[in-house]
Length: 335
Image: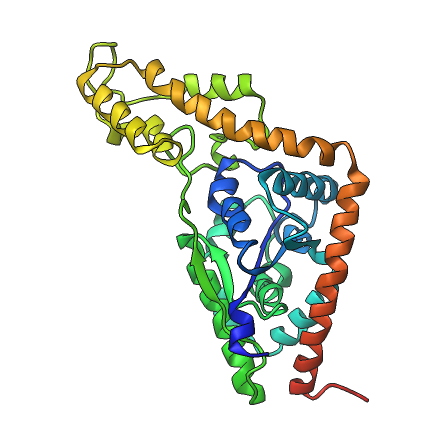
């Protein structure tokens, strides 16, 4: 495997935790759609990762996986251009995880950026498990399995990728062969998608717009968004920098609309509902395309399963080649 080969590969996955929202689209999926036309892409539903924090409640994993994949397809991820599969359907991930865990220092895992943060946020769950501590090793296996030179991430995930790079570097050093290339970060354009309240869009903040959400629900959510508190009355001027609506305009609106909204806010030349109207139209126009695309997949689950089966078979072919080299490096071949 040459560096040139790995530089044309991309690997990325998402945990199936429920329906996706605009934060997922602008932070991850939109970038996948762009990358699939210029790179050899492997996109997977990380169902094993869902167990790291949700091992006591697994009833919805299969349904969430299906809904998430339909959202991907609706957003424009193309099974003819990218390999789409479910992580657990490629058991080679588990073997590479095992082999990498043998050389991954516990201290590296304990200093993973989200290790203590997640324990604090999910204090109602027992996360004192090897699976939770070792999830960065499984994450490393997911990426290194395809010897991908590039991983699309947000700025807040770069530290996670650095740990993947360290594990690859250590494996190559311990066994004296460069088998696993160190992946580079491909930063997404809108890594932090603003939510309806100005915070980062997140299910936990209850400030999201789902993918494929009905137009009337989108209109209701945007119309009731809080604006600059200085605009108590229609004639009061405001400051776009203090307005969550303007944050969304910066994602959705063309420069002339941005300028119109900013000037109208500062001068009180437009009301807040006036400002929200083009934003509602832009979001709905984007959603309408996804709703149309999703229709054939939502009503034909066998088609989605066939796409995932074909993707898993292709991914397993690549995974077997990687494991053959990894086993040879480790010295476990046995004829």
